[in-house]
Length: 482
Image 1 (cartoon, rainbow, N blue to C red):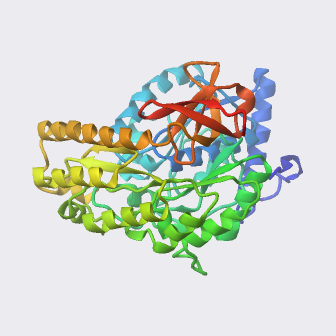
Image 2: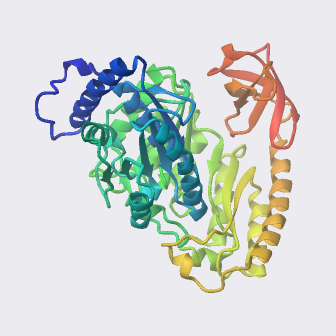
Image 3: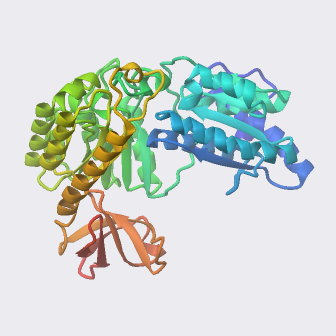
């Protein structure tokens, strides 16, 4: 949506209703930034650093869109006029990394005292981290959380107009604000939030505490956004939520995630639909049926198992068993035989025995994952698991982790070579990082493909002969037959 901010009366009181209120503050900030441009004889710049999951990166697209509407120009260095860190707090070492980066910003601000530094995201939802920033990192100007990302212009105006520190972190919210600017990284693919928050309370996870309870967007708003993206040349959308399978339960008129997928599939111009993340306890037969008959839903499902031991899964509060999970995998593979299944696995959860670990290895062998994100359990303050007895020793955890990687890699190599020799459709994403004469793209099943090509192919879906499997990617050639 293109807004003419010059037509907004900035002498009038700020509107109460959103998003009109934020458009008003964007216009107010624009006036301040224009004055600064005249004074300095140049455009003002901004730099963003995003940590964590795809939800955070989607939030940063919104923040960048707001900053660009205000008049900032994106920079490739932290020596900018406005810098923000969109933080992750899933693991405690993520917090340490952020504080390490802040040291450099302090030096930059000494040289440019009018530089504005902001911190937002999951880490800022934790009261102890807010207090640490407030007392120890006094050069940070603006702090906000996950619930009020949309308020950036208002908070920035408060900071710029009064040259004061602004802290505005909401404990919880049920608001979802639509129709604000967004700056997408890619022109041909885009993430689309379908819900926010999480109700699962896995015992090792901080997310429900920092992102709040589940809130679903209205299906008509989601479809409208997808239609707009399609009109702008987007061919692939990724539907995002902490647990997409529970989408729609809290709406005034409840709707299933499977039904939402059928609505998105009807949007002309969209060729591929992806989604993440799926919680096994909520993955329905209806969803499997929709995936089996869809022409647009990609042949890839990320289905985190976390552990293969039913005993550990109960301690994790995952609400399914090993048997239930494997039955689900069998159902999915029967309905969609060429699907790629990926997963997340945690090694060394408190109380995990060698027998429990063997159960995890058994699931990997039976589920035949195409790839897995493997993690060593990291004690996270504020979660029930952090207080559990029988924390596993580092030595044992690392030994198990190495064994798990070996089995995961063996299984993945078997799965990933299956399409060698086939001609498959590839969405070309970028010039190859290592060879400028080649391009890189992805199959429907999310496998990476490298082949000879140039920048004119980026954003197009083209047929490629998969000549050779390299274990975790394919080498191919553009098919001249189409």
